[in-house]
Length: 313
Image 1 (cartoon, helix red, strand yellow):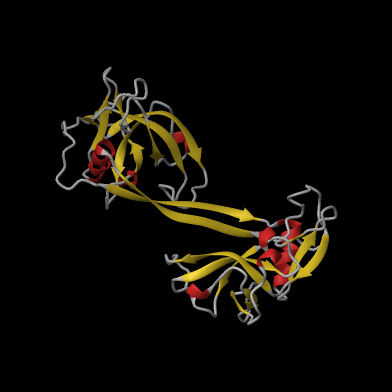
Image 2 (spheres, helix red, strand yellow):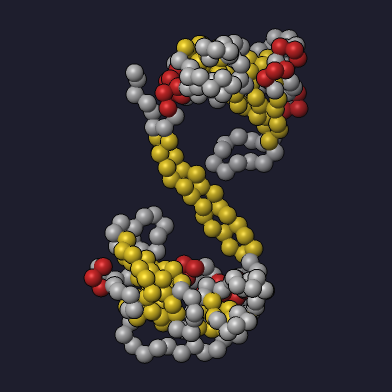
């Protein structure tokens, strides 16, 4: 059996959100080296602040400044920091209850080793050199044996408040396509498209999945399909994707390759976008060194009759 492929993949996108009055004040305060919490009806001070009371669900906006010093309530040692974490050297993840707060804030404590960290230890904020209005404006916490700091009583009003944030969402993982799709990908490197036939219903699935989605039985019989096919449905893309060097508008389509019982995705080129249509006969266009078709172009054949592909819509 050939070796099953695997490769590292990254899913990454910027997440943009606007801020309400409480989070706006909290993040703007961090930019100005001020830590703000919110006081509930029963007198508790929550840090980080929330906009609704977690007990009563009432809206709360009574901002109150707390001290930049606090106490570790619980912690765990991080032996191997990962990309994007607060520190590049080993550190402690800790819940820190700032002086004047009734809840704890999760952040990093910069300590020389796990023996230097304990529940109840006193710490203070180490501010980032450059602050933009984000939780990373707190670079980390550091051990502190001085007096309890006293807040200045800031009201939470700022001249230039932060109104929104952009957070980078990213997922790193290793993907393995499995036996069936490994064979499919290896065939593509030879400019061949190979599917698998279900031993029960006899349908040919491309890309193959290792099992028939209709009958639920395993598939193993390989069947070469295409290379030509028929456009079944399509959409016109008008928004340019980041890091994709294709001018808009362009057409992305479902293409039923000849001999296949499942349509696959592909870009349509070699024809004006407004002339692409259901039933258009197309063929793959390969670029030098590519492992898959760059796009599909019209073959010049007459359009396929609707009845020949209606079951593949």
